[in-house]
Length: 320
Image (tube, rainbow, N blue to C red; front, side):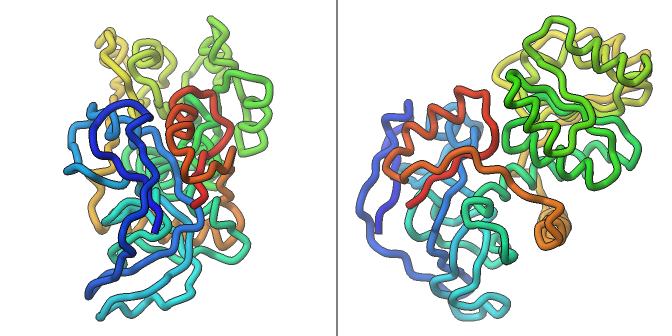
């Protein structure tokens, strides 16, 4: 089979398409034929050697995929050969024609949801649900600001929040991005390239501020986010590329909070609840992942450049 392999940490050029032996499932494992693999920013951090946990070399990147069950190991009961599935987590990496998973990492993909859309579920929708519902505890009627609303996590958050009765506000850097965010559930979209864009958000709330902020670039925005919070507001940090200076008094006066999200901290019980909710949303049509571009597997280096360059209008996926 073909797979992307990384033999040394570094830039996108260390991603090599190679022929490797086919995989076979052991007891309690599921083998999935990958039709589309999701590309996430975290995979660029791991590839560069800048992530907190480094996989042993060589390795195949990727945790998300949409595909078909190819084979199941002994003891696997709820999945069968030929099932349409999405993968959220992998034992062997998803930038490949085949990937091995535990049964808990494999979820049924409803009819009407494409494999490319299936590849856009794992990291983006799980992260968005974890941040919005489980960490921030956002409720119907809450005003939620999503920074970078046109990326995979941002679009997922807009759809989830709007479906739950929250008032969603998004930021985008282009006219096309603003239109997309509005189409996906944002009641207000502002251009984050404009100096006073947070003033527009505060005015939208009649000066009260927002209840929740989902922050994708905390090293740039966190210091400003705090002034846009309502009393008791919460900022959930989903992404950051460096350090930032804040004024703690902005937190104190509002009795506000800054919370963090890291996928590796997700418990099995939390993951089960999340995928139950996502499965229902996908089946009903409330949740519809947006795919920006499908790129051949051999062009994984270009995909890594694109996912970090931004701005994005949906998910970048690889097609083996």
